[in-house]
Image (cartoon, rainbow, N blue to C red; front, side, top):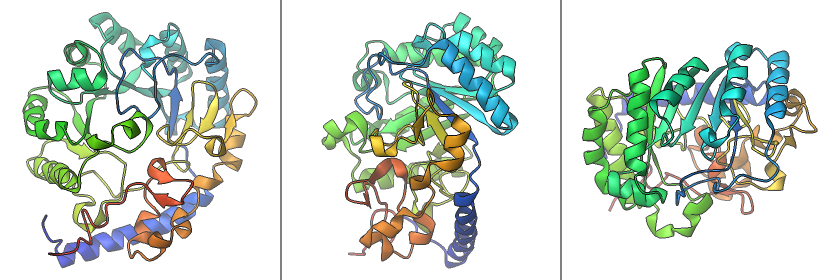
Length: 367
C-alpha cells in the first residue's frame, strides 16, 4: 500500500468533515433518491453469496395491482424526477407480469434500472426492456466460466449471462450497462483474467465488491476475503482507474484516507434510510435490501402503510450515528467519517460492525 501524501490527506479530511456535517443535516431531512422494488425472491440461480437467500417466490408476494397502486402513490407523494426505481429480486424477469408492471411505471414517468443475472435476456427481451424505458442495468459476473457457473449453481450461467450482456449492448438503447463482480478468497485469483475480458466488452463500468458476511455467504466462512485479498482488490481497482478504465468499488465500506476517492467516484456514505429505501416482495418496507431481514428493522408494510408516511416518520434507526453504541468505534479517530460503517454489515445484537477496514487498509500496525 502507498502511504497517503500528507497534503492529500489534509484535503480528504476536509472533504470528509464537510460530508459528515452534511450527513448530520441529512438525518433530519432525508432525500429519497433510490427506491428498490424486490419484485420476487424467485431465482433461477442458487448463488452461494446471496444476501437475500433467494430461491423460490414467497407465497404472499405483492400482486400486479398492488405494484400499480404503489407506483400511483409514489408519483402522487414525491417528485419522481428525483427518484430512480431500482428493480431487483431474486431474478426480476421471472415475474410473469414484469413487463406489465414496468410498462406502467414507464407510462407514469418513472426512471428505472434493473439488477439481473441476464440469463433470460434474449434479443427480444432486450428490446422489450428498451421499450419499457429501462435506463440502466447491472449484470452479475462472478468469475471465469467454470467459476461463475459453480458459484451460481447453474450450468451455462456464464454463457447465458454474457449472451444477455451482448444483447443489451446490441440494443443500443440504455444509458448505462454495468457488470458487477463479487470477489472472494477463491476467485480473487481470476481478477486479472476477468479484467482482460471486461476490456473487450463495450460496457460502461465494472463494479467490483468483496464477499460480505451476510445471507448464504455465512455458510461459507472459508471464502471470506483475507486481509491480503482485500488489499489485492483495492490495489487492483486503484491501478485500473489510473489507467482510465471505468472500474469502481461498490458502496459497502469506509476505506480510510488512502483509498477514499481513489477506488470510486466520491467519498463513502451509507445511503440506507437517508437516500435509499426498499419495498420487499411481501410488502415489507426497509432500507437497503442487503440489511438483515429481522422484524425490528422492518419499518412498515405497504399493504397497510402509505410509503410517504413511513419515509417521513420511520427509519429512525438508520438516521443516527450508530457508532455511539460501539465502544471500539467511539475510540476511533475515523468515527466521524465512518459512523460505524455500513448498515448491511452491522451486528444489531452486539452493536458493532461485522466489517471494519481499520487495521487492514488504514491505521495498520507496522512490523
